[in-house]
View 1 (cartoon, one colour):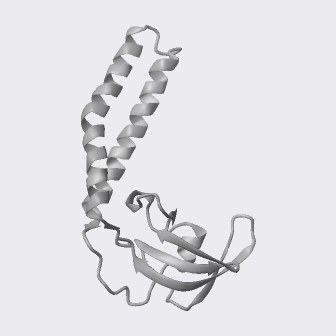
View 2 (cartoon, one colour):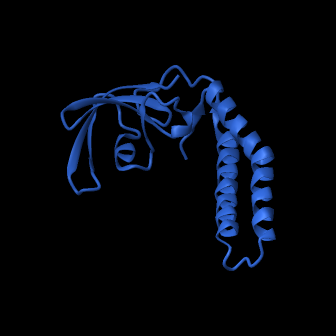
View 3 (spheres, helix red, strand yellow):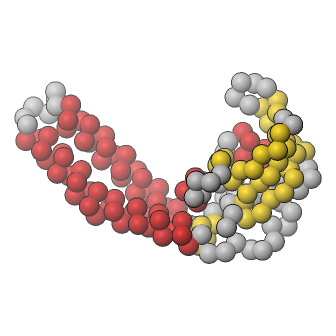
Length: 157
């Protein structure tokens, strides 16, 4: 399992979202469900089913945030990356001839200024663990083989 580094700002933002969802968010969705339930027949009550779906999505997000905050390393990552690409790093690479800079990890840690690729995406899986100067390739969803040369990798700050 890869380590996820969160800046204190990102951790605070996620904790704030979790606090809202567990408190006012749950109360709000419960009120929606109760109001829809009061309308009568639940079988054909679209508002009730929509509210229950929303509740399910919210509970899934709560679980995701809790897991992320419990397992993430909060603070400053080690100064040295040992020359290897890892989760939570900003990677500069030449992809199909064009230089590109992106964050490898979860969009939760990004402040929105970079494209973010998951370690599980085709590009992310190809570059994860690669060393600076190394050339790797991956198969795009359209079946095309794409070459990637790692130029630099530094921890996201």
